[in-house]
Amino acid sequence: MAEKMGILGRKLGMTRIFGDDGASVAVTVIQAGPCPVTQVKTEDKDGYNALQIAFSEAKEKHVSKAMQGHFAKAGTGLYSALREIRLAGAPEQKAGDTLTCELFKTGDVVKVTGKSIGKGYQGRMRRWNFRGCKDTHGDEKVHRNNGSIGNNTFPGHVIKGRKMAGQWGAETVTQPSAVVVDVRPEDNVIIVKGAVPGPKNGLVLIRKQ
Image (cartoon, rainbow, N blue to C red; front, side, top):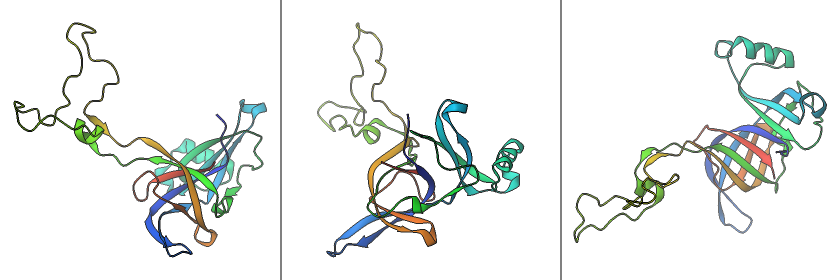
């Protein structure tokens, strides 16, 4: 599926700014780029149009020999994060070019993708917001249970997809329709309204809507 141009970044944290009317607005500060282009794919050669971009410089000892050769071919330094962005048309950039936060401007609507904070193994009530069973009147040792999970004779097994206890978080999540409220090229920073997925210093992908 083709996407619009994007850039990799790092979530620095949240703060607030004040609008012209004095209202307090919660915002997220993101270090967006710079991201060198490490590979260009075209429909004629690869079957689709895409750009591969890198982010977060890495030491040589942390990069495999194969990836060192890949970066050398592109004429860039060594990086720890790579992402491929499919494009609807042929890309204008070439390997070795650099994408910066100037790709965006104030007022742009973007979508931010990151990995949500992992909460570990959680019970049904916290994971799915179940009410739980009664505290009294006959209920014993099942107060935080979810009740029945199926029928006895038919279908005779627990149906797939039933909301149960399990791993919560640590999933790829996209926050759509985030508004860019400020762009600061001198600091490689963009500021978007509201929260975005992931922990502080988490890797995020910012794409145009």
